[in-house]
Amino acid sequence: MTTPVVSPPACGGRPKIVAIGIAPLGIISIGIVPMGVVSIGVVPMGVLSIGAVAMGVINASVVGMGILIAGVNVMGVWWVGIEGMGPFRLRSQSGQVHQHHGQQGAKQNVYAYPSKQVALQKAKELGCEGVHAMGSLWMPCREHPSH
Image (cartoon, rainbow, N blue to C red; front, side, top):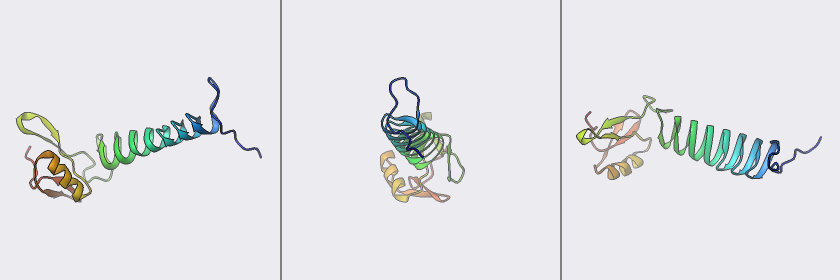
């Protein structure tokens, strides 16, 4: 049995089965700026991306962008995380971001959070006091904003 080559391909070279290094290209890529089907590292890009800043179809990351994402600060179609942007949040009660219209018709997003502490911080940022429960989540401000 031979050990797979793990060095990055030469310019214009073919992807390796396993690529490890700086900007590796392979089926399984591990390193800094890896690209491949499964990418693990700092700034990974691929179908399945795991790392600090991930971009791909499925991401598990601190900051991620893609279709299905789990992380701290994420953007995508379906997402799980502390903060995120996208039409559907997984594991929320309604499955959708809670939105309201602010004063003078300006659109303002008011999110529901899994943590009471995070909702309190967002209330301060919005200029209101307290929080209120929304199902199993917490929303900023003592009272629910009117539509």
